[in-house]
Length: 331
Length: 83
Image (cartoon, rainbow over all chains, first blue to last red):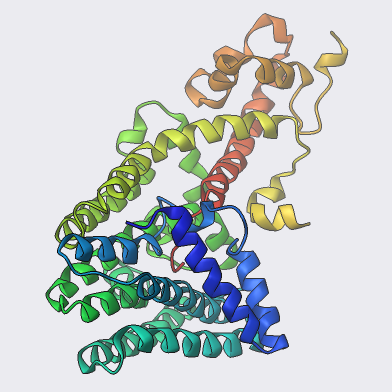
């Protein structure tokens, strides 16, 4: 199986190739997105986050599983699929940042999304050709994604409570993450594994999103973004969450513990899907992510104590409590 | 010693800040509501009763802000997903 160093090399090669062909104004937006996502830097950490989606590992796992079954995937095919992974991911990011982020007024992001989609199409064609089976799947996934994108915007602007069913419905936005590995399955004629692939993407992304919504709780509250997690915790109760982390026993039953348990439940669901999809290659990632989720409350406890000691000596006012710490750092 | 009892910029007496920076067990007891009063009653801190009662609410505020810092640190460790 490709190691992480090789995976990063392939990903970076495709990012450089994209930079070379983009018009200057679009390239500028692309460079901004790469900086924001800490990609195309020497540091491999942003590429491989145990608490995030295994964006680049997933195609490598599937390629390894197919290899174990005697289906050889040429290096250039796996490389092109990794290119689809990164360009497709950044296409989604550009759209989401335009819809939801501070850069909403930047038309460069819309232009960039179009360009990235075209570049990833070229790579997909090199892997699957004109396969009717694959492209029918592609159309289904991307139209569901488009519908989910608008549904998310409606929910953000509306006042209705966001429930678990909304959270799961919005995960249709994660379906494009299955496209790169699906291209490999199509090429290898192992389409029977598509169900496991889609189930893995759904459950693994749900676990990531729950952690993401938890750690973004205060930013979302400050910015008026509504999430299932913020709904469950309660905006006014969020300032008391620290007592659960500081306490020695309440952490077993509190809101944070319950949110992490939800994430763990989705993780176990993703582990079952991964077992069907790529049992050997995904094994280490499954164990690492489970360990990180189980340790999350303890990690928060340690971070809270260190931050508390640091804060004791800092000039602070009560009004600061309402401020996004990232905005504070940017001042 | 008078100097260390001066309020720090955070509004917390210097004696408390310095002790917390050098004694994590004390910092832990200061953070927990259940053990805070006991920690602040330590005679070496030389806090008046008024200072102690004002400090407890202030420490709650600082703990809440610190928790946002802690969540942010986990976030910055990197979560690659759609959100």
